[in-house]
Length: 447
Ligand code: LLP
Image (cartoon, rainbow, N blue to C red):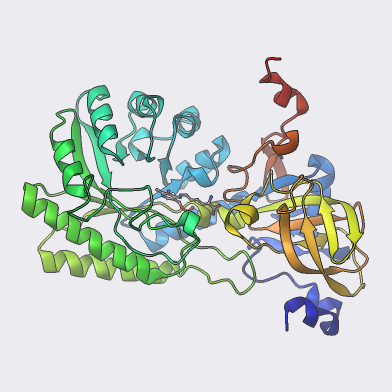
């Protein structure tokens, strides 16, 4: 029996509790069907900033950063800025002592604009452009993670002095996640292979870097994928990477001192989704690295990890207004946003929940499909969702867990301006990124 079949018989009270785990910890139910987000009533936020809009709980972001630093006090925690790259967010995370994983000149420009310390920044990417490399060199980004022989040559020519670099390795660890976000196996585009029969393998990469006097190899990197909940996969990657560090020492006589195991830690989007066991991860990684290093007689490298989603994902919500309800062969609740502010269901089959906010109702709940306003039938936000039968145009819907890869993946499809990103702390709301206007959209079009 599905949740929606069960809910009418449970009554409204049970159905109206906040789904555990998926809303930011500072989100609570208020009177009259209100939702309190970081101390502010969501219906007031929607009235003030319009819809659709992304809201971000600053305290939750900072708490996630603190939790990572507390769980892994000896590791460098680099926020993957691709998850959410805005000036305020980078400023908060710099203050919390995090480092930063960037993957373009644009992300470096945002980091630079807030004075994010360059020695705490890494640059990634399987196809960095000369502009990306030059931006990293100009700002003094401490580590550039190399992902092709061409890039090694290009950076070797551009760099002066001894630019610190790492080599991205394909550890061939299956992450058990969606294929589009699996990045540590053979046959996908990231990293150098460990297979001797593959031409562009790790050994060739090491030799190519050593042949460049302007580059200094300091470590290895791997990233097995995203939305990964299995800690044993990280243990496996850590063990393999120590093996590679040891092989490089034995073959080339160099002891690399840094190991970056990437990010990818899962967050729950729906009740019942697995939670990432951060303390278990920290403990098991520590044991695995200590054991492997001791058994190979290799000095413990400095560990870097790169969580993105786990820092900002569950700190954010999106609020939409219902434009129309169509009671056809299914009940479709169409809202004023959709795949332009959240392409994740279309890209990865991602699932979301949503709740009515701002008014109380005792109407029974029925299974409905929340859809967007875009001209594609795949423009679905949440399928088979139990919503009150009296839902109507003008109602507000809040969707949790939209802090990561929503603002950053948003598009202008159908020439709809991207939503604002609003930070909320202790009930005080501040626009972090304003709504995109038709004027913004027209400005680039040269006629
Ligand atoms: N490090 C590297 C090198 C990465 O490529 C990524 C993500 C991360 C760290 C951070 O992963 P996270 O902890 O955020 O899972 N758009 C997709 C996710 C793509 C992730 C790409 N790389 C989504 O919405 O699920």
